[in-house]
Image (cartoon, rainbow, N blue to C red; front, side, top):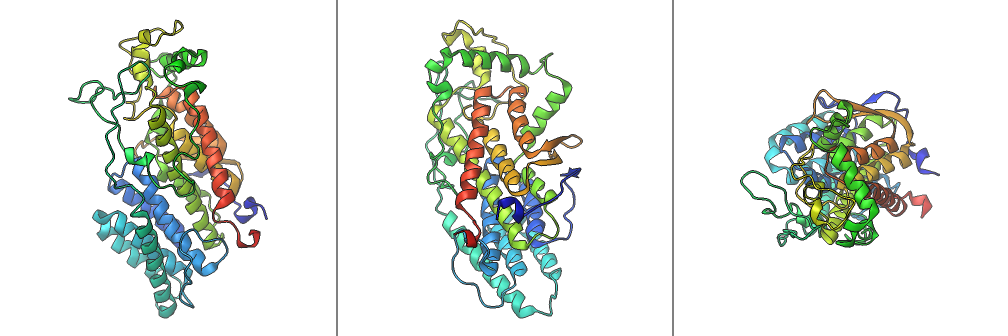
Length: 427
């Protein structure tokens, strides 16, 4: 059986709009509650990937432990006889999110009560529901205990970069001078992956194939710098209004925003375990995509266009020219340029959706952080391709880092689909 036959859907005209959480199956319902928790607690994008993967893996192992249609991810213990899979999904999601978002506990408690009251047969099948809840809580506890040692909370030495040509340094921010701040989220470069064998499994070669400082002399580097210099400038006359809005949209997007794509396209009659599997795969890939990005960034620490353009007279390349007043449309994130995190992340997630549901579909993406603007796509792969352009239009990436990031995201998704949560009959 191919993966498309596991889940099929007509996505024509689907809009992925933020709004109240509707009653539905426990998997999509609690995925939406996860979005709510992320935005209520202002969880940053780099942390969202890990949290969402933990939640959805707990849901998957809880549901699949009962249904036994796919290879388990982490928990292989047998569930209690008669346990309800829907109750297990609710309790696993709640238990994981209660641990990850303690400040959101009161809201989660209310959601738990609502979800349990909405289960078919509740409270008539109280024993089956109770056993499902006990199993879901156990599974979530096991996943949380495992991830408590994944190095997320380990202190990491500060990464300041350097001041030689080509080396990353922070841009001026508030009262801090140029290059005074260390890179943020250094723990992602050391985080235990969900599907990869190590953080460096998909590490690419050095920038432009040669690394710093030779990369600065490469003809492709000069061309990339000129492109972002023109299109990514804050007041660029060459960038259209639409391109400006798309750049800002993708800057606002996080992995949970892209999870809304899966919720919107999910066929209502899909099995609960299939839904749990798709979300688990999506979010494992999302987290590991960020690990790939940070691993590469800290391995090569290439400077951002902000400094590359302002200091082009120091790079030794006769085909580049400096513009000491250049400013990008978007404030560059505080970590090195190569590779593009968002390109790896979106390419990976969209590849999972394309492989599982088929690529040829029309859908719309938006973000609660950018109300009033949305973008329509004809294919999942079109969204991944547009991220590359958006990062250039935003003035924060060179094309080389975006194109390579997309290739890495696709490779990561293919690796995850080939090796994790596979149908039992295929083993």
